[in-house]
Image (cartoon, rainbow, N blue to C red; front, side):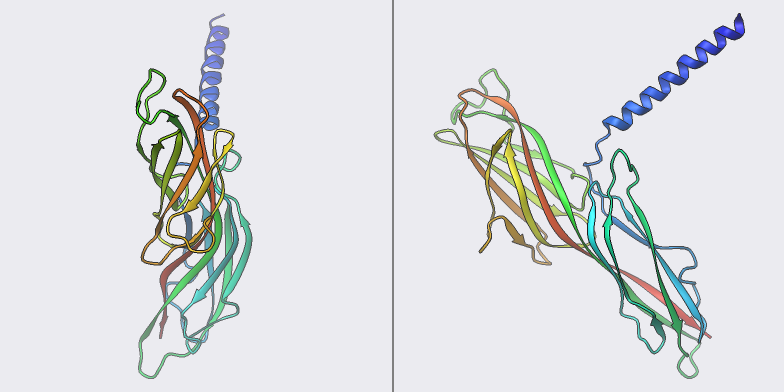
Length: 282
């Protein structure tokens, strides 16, 4: 009888722990904070020391730690002097690397190989350190969603419904590009303006940001990037100015304050360069 009671208690404990862990996994939001692609070489691939006239292999591990898929990845090895290090191929391509999700919590990981052959050291040299770059480009996405208090009244900030926050800040949405701040402005005659400030917080560079959709509840918003010339829904970022402001406007039909969801989606292209060194030794 005591043994049966012990089994029952153990079963209840296991079920309770399992259901709690499952609920935590289901409720976890991957689209938060800063996350980006990770590039690293496996241990001894390439070797710490490479000898003259010898073959070597470089195995690059690529991890998508973002909450979004990365597509059209081009990975290159740049900057090696072929007199000392000759690679069979210097560029490889991946169509897709899946991001973090409930079905893939760690994100997808891939390994790519670059094989090479070393040359001879120059006369009387004991060692030749050869700096080079891992260069990668890819396309990814960014989703921003938040619940806002909207008050159509230009003069009344609070009407016993919900309280408007004129300015909200964020820590990121699970990518190197992030919406860092949202400003809510009510104009006379129930006009709403939302200003989203985007910033590249990763180690690489954003070239283009494209707006895909912008909605307030089920209502489409009219949006444009600030300081754009041709296409207001797309902006090219300068290398030294990795931020942009998106301005969205819409007309409010309700009379009193209410809460609703603002949802804005983007795609962008990204470039990363990491410096490494190969050592040719006698």
